[in-house]
Amino acid sequence: MTPANPVEAAELAIADALAGHPGGLRRLPAAPRHLSPTARAWFREVAGRYEIPPHHVGNLVGAAVALDRARECRERLDADGIADLDRYGQVREHPLAAGERAYLVTHARLVRELGLDLQTVATPRKPTRWRP
Image (cartoon, rainbow, N blue to C red; front, side, top):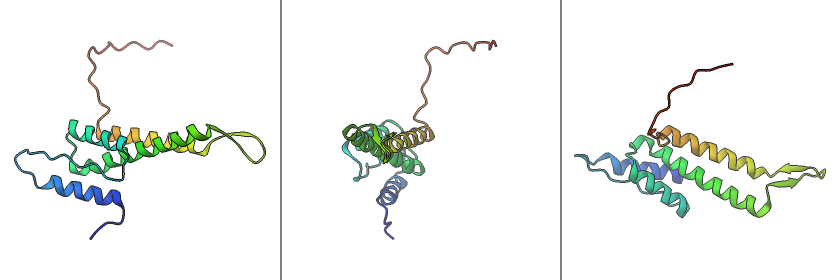
């Protein structure tokens, strides 16, 4: 059974590649081919730096796709401008601005879901007392 969606096909191939490696031998998941070179480089960097469980590879693919779509929206916004005129001559936000925002939020949520946003704080500060 071959999935029609290229993201699902990539997820299945990655899960199959990761499933049969005993003894702690870790094989890095391959970056899906439909990603841009920038998103593929990010995917490879994250997959190489962190141990991503097979059931989270789909989240990593989704984060890379969201990063790609946000970049595409940004390129179009740079060409067209952030503001547009509606049929009444009123200035309105370009529709792709909301798309870029949504893709960046999706990327951030998937990165958080993967646990990649955690950083150790060198010197934790003492909690301050709240004063009205």
